Image: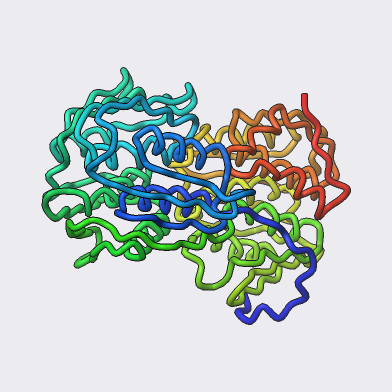
Length: 427
């Protein structure tokens, strides 16, 4: 991997803002006194769900034309005393918003979402909020609907197992400065550490005092947040599809605005593409991937820290010259779908040999045959297999191409703009 970014830029992919950065910055702006500006935010199903929920709580959020920026005026301590809040399909909303409402509000708050979101676990978050002083009731399986009655959170010492999702930890940390006393969280197990690093960096940019005195321990001081301006980077997870498209088509794709100073761990997907034989250049202001005309296999890679991109690799792995094994991804079974099983089933439908275990998957080389791809309302399944269809020139049919609206409503249009041969079929 080179760092200078001196390669020909080739095709310039227009990747929208990071969902992870947008929803964290939106929540922190709501928690800060004064008006913050979020520049180039992502406007998608998940971020709009959080924006509307915050408005329901009384937070003022206004958007410039074409969502060039959002202005958010926070007033913690003066949010609605009672609200029914719709989280749609968004895991970040269901895991970030309850700690905020419990810490900033004084009243009763009910959170609910789609059947897909109701299937995702919330018990670790509910138990943590109870230990911090809230009264919490969950659905029958420890999931949504979630009801929180709170007179503020008291802070203190909290142990939080984050082996299922880092979003519980991020939500509680972001609420920390609104609590009455310092919050200290010990974390015996954690997945997706880069997302926690992103959370801490954004908290500091809003003026929070946060330190990590030891591995697995985070201290957050009370005192609130200061309004600020935040520029949202392009989404590194979404960029993975365009980088993979470059690798499997032997072309060059550049994503402007996504450089070596990125807060997003998923930019590390480019290192995986290097293992697969692509050339990568990460510069100050952009990242470029060039396919070399040959996709290498014969390697094993732990993608636990960047699990949102494991599907991108697995979906195109049949085009490699030897098997590819991905490990460390057991928590991906608890996302929008059981992503390991769904990827495996769809690849088998394409005639590809796949082996899988609790937290790993091995994909063998093969020529995909035409197949109907079951998206399971999972945006990342749809986008990953779109790249396989592009790279293999195989007639793959997505049963729900519109599910990409969760993070990138214009995905199919942009992929077709860059690669005119790409077409998506719906059945």
